[in-house]
Image 1 (cartoon, each protein chain N blue to C red):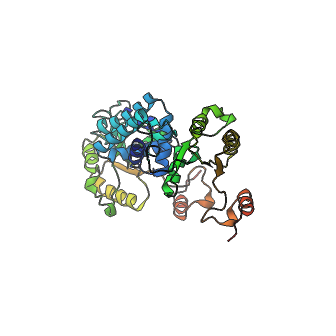
Image 2 (image 1 turned 120 degrees about the horizontal axis):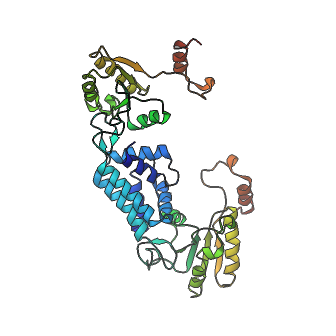
Image 3 (image 1 turned 90 degrees about the horizontal axis):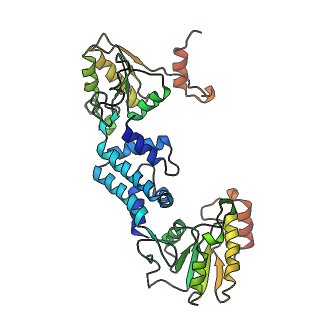
Length: 197
Length: 197
Protein backbone atom coordinates (compact mmCIF):
# COMPACT_ATOMS: atom_id res chain seq x y z
CA UNK A 1 0.00 0.00 0.00
CA UNK A 2 1.17 3.50 -0.85
CA UNK A 3 2.79 5.21 2.13
CA UNK A 4 1.01 8.49 1.38
CA UNK A 5 -2.37 6.75 1.34
CA UNK A 6 -1.58 4.75 4.47
CA UNK A 7 -0.51 7.96 6.17
CA UNK A 8 -3.59 10.02 5.33
CA UNK A 9 -5.87 7.12 6.38
CA UNK A 10 -4.11 6.76 9.75
CA UNK A 11 -4.30 10.50 10.36
CA UNK A 12 -8.00 10.71 9.46
CA UNK A 13 -8.71 7.83 11.84
CA UNK A 14 -7.74 10.10 14.72
CA UNK A 15 -11.10 11.79 14.22
CA UNK A 16 -14.12 10.42 16.10
CA UNK A 17 -16.40 8.06 14.17
CA UNK A 18 -13.86 7.54 11.38
CA UNK A 19 -12.63 3.99 10.98
CA UNK A 20 -10.41 2.40 8.35
CA UNK A 21 -13.10 2.12 5.69
CA UNK A 22 -14.43 5.66 6.12
CA UNK A 23 -10.88 7.02 6.11
CA UNK A 24 -10.26 5.24 2.81
CA UNK A 25 -13.49 6.64 1.36
CA UNK A 26 -12.53 10.15 2.45
CA UNK A 27 -9.05 9.71 0.95
CA UNK A 28 -10.56 8.64 -2.38
CA UNK A 29 -12.78 11.70 -2.30
CA UNK A 30 -9.83 13.99 -1.47
CA UNK A 31 -8.09 12.59 -4.52
CA UNK A 32 -10.92 13.83 -6.74
CA UNK A 33 -11.01 17.33 -5.23
CA UNK A 34 -9.08 20.26 -6.72
CA UNK A 35 -5.63 20.57 -5.17
CA UNK A 36 -6.30 24.16 -4.09
CA UNK A 37 -9.51 23.12 -2.35
CA UNK A 38 -7.65 20.39 -0.46
CA UNK A 39 -4.93 22.89 0.50
CA UNK A 40 -7.50 25.31 1.83
CA UNK A 41 -9.19 22.51 3.80
CA UNK A 42 -5.90 21.36 5.33
CA UNK A 43 -4.94 24.93 6.14
CA UNK A 44 -8.30 25.71 7.76
CA UNK A 45 -7.89 22.69 10.07
CA UNK A 46 -4.41 23.72 11.20
CA UNK A 47 -5.34 27.42 11.51
CA UNK A 48 -8.45 26.59 13.52
CA UNK A 49 -6.40 24.55 15.99
CA UNK A 50 -3.67 27.19 16.31
CA UNK A 51 -5.55 30.47 16.22
CA UNK A 52 -8.88 29.79 17.92
CA UNK A 53 -9.34 31.38 21.35
CA UNK A 54 -11.88 31.25 24.14
CA UNK A 55 -13.83 34.43 24.78
CA UNK A 56 -12.50 35.89 28.05
CA UNK A 57 -16.03 36.84 29.08
CA UNK A 58 -18.21 33.83 28.17
CA UNK A 59 -15.78 31.06 27.14
CA UNK A 60 -17.37 30.79 23.66
CA UNK A 61 -14.96 29.96 20.83
CA UNK A 62 -13.69 33.20 19.37
CA UNK A 63 -11.24 34.70 16.88
CA UNK A 64 -10.53 37.59 19.27
CA UNK A 65 -10.41 38.18 23.02
CA UNK A 66 -14.17 38.85 23.05
CA UNK A 67 -16.53 36.70 20.96
CA UNK A 68 -18.91 38.33 18.44
CA UNK A 69 -21.83 37.92 20.87
CA UNK A 70 -20.10 39.48 23.88
CA UNK A 71 -18.85 42.39 21.77
CA UNK A 72 -22.27 43.01 20.20
CA UNK A 73 -23.62 46.07 22.01
CA UNK A 74 -27.17 45.48 20.75
CA UNK A 75 -27.53 42.30 22.80
CA UNK A 76 -29.32 42.28 26.14
CA UNK A 77 -26.73 42.21 28.93
CA UNK A 78 -29.26 41.53 31.68
CA UNK A 79 -29.74 37.85 30.69
CA UNK A 80 -27.15 35.08 30.56
CA UNK A 81 -27.92 31.66 29.13
CA UNK A 82 -25.62 28.97 30.56
CA UNK A 83 -24.79 26.09 28.20
CA UNK A 84 -22.53 23.06 28.32
CA UNK A 85 -20.69 23.57 25.07
CA UNK A 86 -20.34 25.76 21.99
CA UNK A 87 -22.59 23.48 19.91
CA UNK A 88 -25.48 24.15 22.32
CA UNK A 89 -24.91 27.90 22.04
CA UNK A 90 -25.06 27.64 18.24
CA UNK A 91 -28.31 25.63 18.40
CA UNK A 92 -29.93 28.36 20.48
CA UNK A 93 -28.50 31.10 18.23
CA UNK A 94 -29.98 29.32 15.22
CA UNK A 95 -33.49 29.83 16.59
CA UNK A 96 -32.96 33.61 16.34
CA UNK A 97 -35.21 33.97 19.41
CA UNK A 98 -32.64 34.71 22.09
CA UNK A 99 -31.00 38.10 22.32
CA UNK A 100 -29.13 37.90 25.62
CA UNK A 101 -25.58 36.81 26.48
CA UNK A 102 -24.25 33.28 26.90
CA UNK A 103 -21.90 31.48 29.19
CA UNK A 104 -20.19 28.28 28.03
CA UNK A 105 -19.28 25.97 30.94
CA UNK A 106 -17.08 23.76 28.81
CA UNK A 107 -18.67 20.53 30.04
CA UNK A 108 -20.63 19.15 32.98
CA UNK A 109 -19.55 17.85 36.39
CA UNK A 110 -18.64 14.18 35.93
CA UNK A 111 -16.82 12.38 38.77
CA UNK A 112 -16.53 9.35 36.47
CA UNK A 113 -14.48 11.35 33.99
CA UNK A 114 -12.71 13.30 36.73
CA UNK A 115 -14.42 16.58 35.85
CA UNK A 116 -15.12 18.67 38.95
CA UNK A 117 -16.69 22.12 39.31
CA UNK A 118 -13.25 23.77 39.18
CA UNK A 119 -12.75 22.36 35.66
CA UNK A 120 -15.77 24.31 34.43
CA UNK A 121 -15.97 28.06 33.92
CA UNK A 122 -18.26 28.60 36.93
CA UNK A 123 -16.10 31.17 38.73
CA UNK A 124 -16.01 33.23 35.55
CA UNK A 125 -19.82 33.19 35.53
CA UNK A 126 -20.03 34.29 39.19
CA UNK A 127 -17.55 37.10 38.52
CA UNK A 128 -19.88 38.48 35.86
CA UNK A 129 -22.81 38.46 38.28
CA UNK A 130 -20.89 40.66 40.75
CA UNK A 131 -21.46 43.72 38.57
CA UNK A 132 -25.21 43.59 39.28
CA UNK A 133 -25.97 44.10 35.59
CA UNK A 134 -27.39 40.58 35.16
CA UNK A 135 -31.04 40.05 36.17
CA UNK A 136 -31.62 36.48 34.97
CA UNK A 137 -29.54 33.35 34.46
CA UNK A 138 -31.18 30.73 32.21
CA UNK A 139 -29.64 27.30 32.72
CA UNK A 140 -29.83 25.28 29.49
CA UNK A 141 -27.87 22.12 30.19
CA UNK A 142 -28.73 18.53 29.31
CA UNK A 143 -30.93 16.33 31.51
CA UNK A 144 -28.33 13.58 31.93
CA UNK A 145 -27.24 12.56 35.44
CA UNK A 146 -24.13 14.74 35.02
CA UNK A 147 -26.25 17.59 33.70
CA UNK A 148 -28.61 17.43 36.70
CA UNK A 149 -25.64 17.33 39.11
CA UNK A 150 -24.25 20.42 37.43
CA UNK A 151 -27.67 22.09 37.57
CA UNK A 152 -27.94 21.57 41.34
CA UNK A 153 -24.38 22.71 41.90
CA UNK A 154 -25.05 25.87 39.87
CA UNK A 155 -28.32 26.60 41.71
CA UNK A 156 -26.38 26.42 44.98
CA UNK A 157 -23.61 28.69 43.77
CA UNK A 158 -26.12 31.19 42.39
CA UNK A 159 -27.83 31.49 45.79
CA UNK A 160 -25.01 33.94 46.56
CA UNK A 161 -26.77 36.35 44.17
CA UNK A 162 -30.32 36.64 45.54
CA UNK A 163 -31.21 39.45 43.11
CA UNK A 164 -30.55 37.24 40.11
CA UNK A 165 -33.52 35.16 38.90
CA UNK A 166 -32.43 31.60 38.00
CA UNK A 167 -34.51 29.69 35.44
CA UNK A 168 -34.12 26.53 33.36
CA UNK A 169 -35.46 25.88 29.88
CA UNK A 170 -38.81 24.04 29.76
CA UNK A 171 -38.82 20.24 29.57
CA UNK A 172 -41.70 18.69 27.71
CA UNK A 173 -42.79 16.93 24.55
CA UNK A 174 -40.84 18.10 21.51
CA UNK A 175 -42.67 19.33 18.42
CA UNK A 176 -43.15 16.39 16.09
CA UNK A 177 -42.58 13.81 18.84
CA UNK A 178 -45.17 11.03 18.98
CA UNK A 179 -46.50 10.74 22.52
CA UNK A 180 -46.50 6.96 22.13
CA UNK A 181 -42.71 6.90 21.89
CA UNK A 182 -41.80 9.57 24.44
CA UNK A 183 -40.17 8.30 27.67
CA UNK A 184 -42.16 8.28 30.94
CA UNK A 185 -40.01 10.90 32.70
CA UNK A 186 -40.59 13.43 29.95
CA UNK A 187 -44.35 12.74 29.91
CA UNK A 188 -44.46 13.07 33.72
CA UNK A 189 -42.69 16.44 33.52
CA UNK A 190 -44.94 17.56 30.69
CA UNK A 191 -48.04 16.67 32.74
CA UNK A 192 -46.79 18.33 35.93
CA UNK A 193 -45.85 21.49 34.05
CA UNK A 194 -49.06 21.69 32.00
CA UNK A 195 -50.22 25.14 30.90
CA UNK A 196 -53.70 26.62 31.00
CA UNK A 197 -54.94 27.64 27.55
CA UNK B 1 -19.98 32.42 15.33
CA UNK B 2 -16.20 32.47 15.18
CA UNK B 3 -14.91 32.82 11.62
CA UNK B 4 -12.22 30.18 12.20
CA UNK B 5 -14.81 27.69 13.43
CA UNK B 6 -17.23 28.52 10.62
CA UNK B 7 -14.39 28.08 8.15
CA UNK B 8 -13.19 24.69 9.35
CA UNK B 9 -16.80 23.41 9.47
CA UNK B 10 -17.49 24.54 5.89
CA UNK B 11 -14.26 22.96 4.69
CA UNK B 12 -14.92 19.64 6.45
CA UNK B 13 -18.39 19.56 4.91
CA UNK B 14 -16.76 19.13 1.51
CA UNK B 15 -16.08 15.54 2.53
CA UNK B 16 -18.72 12.89 1.77
CA UNK B 17 -21.07 11.99 4.62
CA UNK B 18 -20.06 15.00 6.72
CA UNK B 19 -22.88 17.44 7.42
CA UNK B 20 -23.00 20.51 9.62
CA UNK B 21 -23.37 18.63 12.89
CA UNK B 22 -20.63 16.10 12.20
CA UNK B 23 -18.31 18.89 11.03
CA UNK B 24 -18.92 20.69 14.32
CA UNK B 25 -18.23 17.51 16.29
CA UNK B 26 -14.99 16.95 14.37
CA UNK B 27 -13.97 20.58 14.98
CA UNK B 28 -14.56 20.19 18.73
CA UNK B 29 -12.41 17.06 18.68
CA UNK B 30 -9.66 18.81 16.70
CA UNK B 31 -9.64 21.47 19.42
CA UNK B 32 -8.77 18.84 22.02
CA UNK B 33 -5.99 17.28 19.97
CA UNK B 34 -2.33 18.29 20.36
CA UNK B 35 -1.41 21.07 17.95
CA UNK B 36 1.43 19.01 16.43
CA UNK B 37 -0.94 16.10 15.79
CA UNK B 38 -3.38 18.42 14.02
CA UNK B 39 -0.52 19.87 11.95
CA UNK B 40 0.61 16.43 10.92
CA UNK B 41 -2.97 15.48 9.98
CA UNK B 42 -3.45 18.63 7.90
CA UNK B 43 -0.10 18.13 6.23
CA UNK B 44 -0.79 14.47 5.41
CA UNK B 45 -4.03 15.48 3.67
CA UNK B 46 -2.35 18.12 1.52
CA UNK B 47 0.69 15.92 0.78
CA UNK B 48 -1.52 12.98 -0.18
CA UNK B 49 -3.41 15.13 -2.68
CA UNK B 50 -0.25 16.66 -4.16
CA UNK B 51 2.23 13.80 -4.19
CA UNK B 52 0.19 10.67 -4.82
CA UNK B 53 0.57 9.08 -8.27
CA UNK B 54 -1.02 6.31 -10.24
CA UNK B 55 1.17 3.29 -10.96
CA UNK B 56 2.07 3.43 -14.66
CA UNK B 57 1.64 -0.32 -14.93
CA UNK B 58 -1.53 -1.14 -12.95
CA UNK B 59 -3.12 2.25 -12.07
CA UNK B 60 -2.92 1.50 -8.32
CA UNK B 61 -2.23 4.51 -6.08
CA UNK B 62 1.50 4.82 -5.61
CA UNK B 63 4.25 7.00 -4.16
CA UNK B 64 6.47 6.24 -7.13
CA UNK B 65 6.08 5.46 -10.83
CA UNK B 66 5.60 1.76 -10.04
CA UNK B 67 3.47 0.70 -7.07
CA UNK B 68 4.93 -1.61 -4.38
CA UNK B 69 3.07 -4.59 -5.85
CA UNK B 70 4.23 -4.08 -9.45
CA UNK B 71 7.83 -3.55 -8.31
CA UNK B 72 7.81 -6.64 -6.06
CA UNK B 73 9.74 -9.26 -8.03
CA UNK B 74 8.48 -12.09 -5.80
CA UNK B 75 4.91 -11.68 -7.06
CA UNK B 76 3.50 -13.92 -9.75
CA UNK B 77 3.49 -12.01 -13.05
CA UNK B 78 1.41 -14.60 -14.90
CA UNK B 79 -1.86 -13.61 -13.16
CA UNK B 80 -3.62 -10.24 -13.17
CA UNK B 81 -6.63 -9.52 -10.97
CA UNK B 82 -8.80 -6.74 -12.43
CA UNK B 83 -10.60 -4.57 -9.86
CA UNK B 84 -12.75 -1.45 -9.99
CA UNK B 85 -10.90 0.66 -7.46
CA UNK B 86 -7.99 0.78 -5.04
CA UNK B 87 -10.19 -0.14 -2.06
CA UNK B 88 -11.05 -3.46 -3.73
CA UNK B 89 -7.36 -4.18 -4.30
CA UNK B 90 -6.65 -3.56 -0.62
CA UNK B 91 -9.48 -5.87 0.44
CA UNK B 92 -7.99 -8.67 -1.64
CA UNK B 93 -4.48 -7.91 -0.37
CA UNK B 94 -5.76 -8.13 3.20
CA UNK B 95 -6.69 -11.78 2.68
CA UNK B 96 -2.99 -12.54 2.10
CA UNK B 97 -4.10 -15.27 -0.32
CA UNK B 98 -3.37 -13.65 -3.66
CA UNK B 99 0.18 -13.35 -4.93
CA UNK B 100 -0.32 -12.14 -8.49
CA UNK B 101 -0.51 -8.68 -10.02
CA UNK B 102 -3.48 -6.31 -10.10
CA UNK B 103 -5.04 -3.92 -12.55
CA UNK B 104 -7.19 -1.05 -11.27
CA UNK B 105 -9.80 0.05 -13.84
CA UNK B 106 -10.64 3.24 -11.98
CA UNK B 107 -14.40 2.67 -12.14
CA UNK B 108 -17.02 0.81 -14.16
CA UNK B 109 -18.79 1.61 -17.42
CA UNK B 110 -21.78 3.80 -16.54
CA UNK B 111 -23.62 5.58 -19.37
CA UNK B 112 -25.76 7.31 -16.71
CA UNK B 113 -22.65 8.96 -15.26
CA UNK B 114 -21.05 9.44 -18.67
CA UNK B 115 -18.30 6.89 -18.00
CA UNK B 116 -17.41 4.97 -21.16
CA UNK B 117 -14.77 2.25 -21.75
CA UNK B 118 -12.22 4.88 -22.80
CA UNK B 119 -12.46 6.48 -19.33
CA UNK B 120 -11.21 3.24 -17.75
CA UNK B 121 -7.68 1.85 -17.92
CA UNK B 122 -8.64 -0.98 -20.28
CA UNK B 123 -6.11 -0.19 -23.02
CA UNK B 124 -3.36 -0.24 -20.39
CA UNK B 125 -4.50 -3.75 -19.41
CA UNK B 126 -4.52 -4.98 -23.01
CA UNK B 127 -1.02 -3.54 -23.56
CA UNK B 128 0.26 -5.69 -20.69
CA UNK B 129 -1.25 -8.81 -22.24
CA UNK B 130 0.67 -8.23 -25.49
CA UNK B 131 3.91 -9.45 -23.87
CA UNK B 132 2.51 -12.97 -23.53
CA UNK B 133 3.72 -13.19 -19.94
CA UNK B 134 0.18 -13.20 -18.51
CA UNK B 135 -1.63 -16.56 -18.43
CA UNK B 136 -4.78 -15.64 -16.49
CA UNK B 137 -6.93 -12.56 -15.95
CA UNK B 138 -9.23 -12.76 -12.90
CA UNK B 139 -12.08 -10.26 -13.13
CA UNK B 140 -13.15 -9.17 -9.64
CA UNK B 141 -15.66 -6.40 -10.22
CA UNK B 142 -18.99 -5.81 -8.49
CA UNK B 143 -22.22 -7.48 -9.61
CA UNK B 144 -24.10 -4.21 -10.15
CA UNK B 145 -25.65 -3.50 -13.59
CA UNK B 146 -22.63 -1.30 -14.38
CA UNK B 147 -20.27 -4.00 -13.12
CA UNK B 148 -21.87 -6.65 -15.33
CA UNK B 149 -21.74 -4.30 -18.35
CA UNK B 150 -18.05 -3.78 -17.69
CA UNK B 151 -17.54 -7.53 -17.27
CA UNK B 152 -19.09 -8.28 -20.68
CA UNK B 153 -17.14 -5.49 -22.33
CA UNK B 154 -13.90 -6.83 -20.82
CA UNK B 155 -14.65 -10.42 -21.87
CA UNK B 156 -15.12 -9.17 -25.43
CA UNK B 157 -11.90 -7.18 -25.43
CA UNK B 158 -9.97 -10.10 -23.94
CA UNK B 159 -11.09 -12.39 -26.77
CA UNK B 160 -8.19 -10.77 -28.69
CA UNK B 161 -5.88 -12.82 -26.42
CA UNK B 162 -7.00 -16.44 -26.89
CA UNK B 163 -4.03 -17.76 -24.88
CA UNK B 164 -5.11 -15.86 -21.77
CA UNK B 165 -7.58 -17.65 -19.48
CA UNK B 166 -10.31 -15.27 -18.25
CA UNK B 167 -12.01 -16.06 -14.93
CA UNK B 168 -14.25 -14.25 -12.46
CA UNK B 169 -14.35 -14.63 -8.69
CA UNK B 170 -16.98 -17.06 -7.37
CA UNK B 171 -20.43 -15.76 -6.49
CA UNK B 172 -22.20 -17.56 -3.67
CA UNK B 173 -23.32 -17.41 -0.07
CA UNK B 174 -20.89 -15.47 2.10
CA UNK B 175 -19.46 -17.02 5.27
CA UNK B 176 -21.70 -16.06 8.17
CA UNK B 177 -24.64 -15.14 5.89
CA UNK B 178 -27.99 -16.58 6.95
CA UNK B 179 -29.55 -18.36 3.97
CA UNK B 180 -32.95 -17.00 5.04
CA UNK B 181 -31.84 -13.43 4.32
CA UNK B 182 -29.77 -13.96 1.17
CA UNK B 183 -31.31 -12.61 -2.07
CA UNK B 184 -32.75 -15.03 -4.65
CA UNK B 185 -30.18 -14.26 -7.36
CA UNK B 186 -27.29 -15.15 -5.07
CA UNK B 187 -29.01 -18.38 -3.96
CA UNK B 188 -29.74 -19.27 -7.59
CA UNK B 189 -26.06 -18.75 -8.50
CA UNK B 190 -24.94 -20.71 -5.45
CA UNK B 191 -27.19 -23.63 -6.42
CA UNK B 192 -26.14 -23.64 -10.09
CA UNK B 193 -22.46 -23.51 -9.14
CA UNK B 194 -22.68 -26.18 -6.41
CA UNK B 195 -19.54 -28.25 -5.71
CA UNK B 196 -19.23 -31.96 -5.17
CA UNK B 197 -17.75 -32.79 -1.76
